[in-house]
Amino acid sequence: MPTQAQDSQSHRLKMINFHLHDNVKVKAGTADPDFGNDISGWQGRIKEIDPESEREHVVYLVAWDSLTLQAMDLPLIVRSEKEGLSWTEMYLFDTDLEPAVCRDATEDVIRTTKELQQAYRENWQNLKNTAV
Image (cartoon, rainbow, N blue to C red; front, side, top):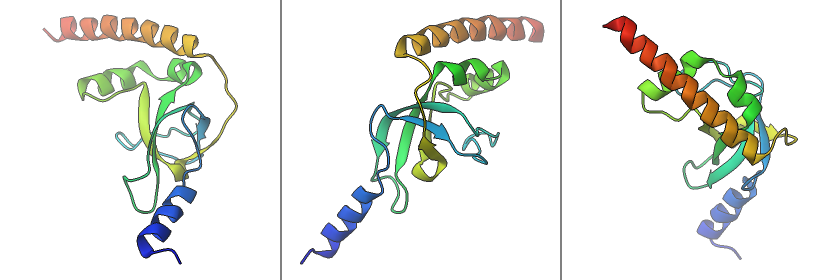
């Protein structure tokens, strides 16, 4: 007969719906946990799984795909950078995610991230120059 700890552990393992590198999509009605804006439909890949973070929910680190990155507003990127937050990935609960079909390659994500980092730097420099 399983002990309570074993039963709890097996229950927690059953809650892991996704695995590393799985493609996922944010469910409709989901808000960014940091800023509160709607992130419904954003897509990416599971980069990290933390089943121990909450008793009821597994937390996943989702690395956004290139199409999601391209659709981000530059002010969101600037705000994330100012507050020391990553805009290329986000921690979300299992209940916020659903399976998705892959829309790009890892190389696309790398290229898009570099392009947006350059745009961020240029935008930030312009903001600093106008504030002086």
